[in-house]
Length: 339
Image (cartoon, rainbow, N blue to C red; front, side, top):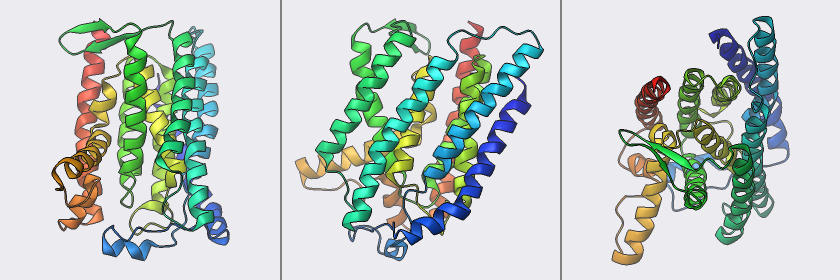
């Protein structure tokens, strides 16, 4: 796949997302769709009270616009160079975006409740989990038919291990955990967006190696959209992505990993998401059993905040870790492609 196609898709998504900020942020302010900060958080976060939520629409819209454009360019290039197009190219793409939009709807309802009720808490955990479980179930049913019931997972140095029907149970739990972990990562200005830019860029390269041009374009559209969003979200943030945005990102983080056929790339390249999610789980279990906290505050980015790290430093370090993990993931995909 020519590099210029990916660059074009990324630039289109970036431009659309960045430009949308000029319209969306004033509109959200007019609707008084501001955030409400918990008192238990870092004291200096109270200054962010009222910052508009649901800015995730910037990269959601830009991704949905850029992907079809990218696919049209890909098809035109294939036709011009007499390259045969895979018959199943569109179905996985639609499924992955559909899964992400499904999670975005759940996030939007959560954000809407927060705005209308003027509180930090939206959905209760039970209702939110049920809605997420429905999206997960629909996605896995679609994946079952599209993947021809491929239930194998590739392990380094071991090879393929067939999990049979247990694969779907395992992936259902993994998807639920990862999507919510991406949500947890959205707690510091620019953090979730920055980590996802690196994650998506790594997968754009991985899909180029695996010769999956459509998903490579999707990855680059996501990276460009998140980069355009960061124009408005880096500290001090003028808008937050809200659960609308973070849930959408969580859906695509999962979809990219599963479509690659290398599911273990999700926790590898997305190591920061996993650490964020695990830190919250560890904190809850420790407090319930030992009545003691492991971290000053969870998720872990708040622990570092309370330890004196600036938001810029957290974004830089966490992004750097994702970059290193991305290089490892790319290397693994390259070695896998040689087999």
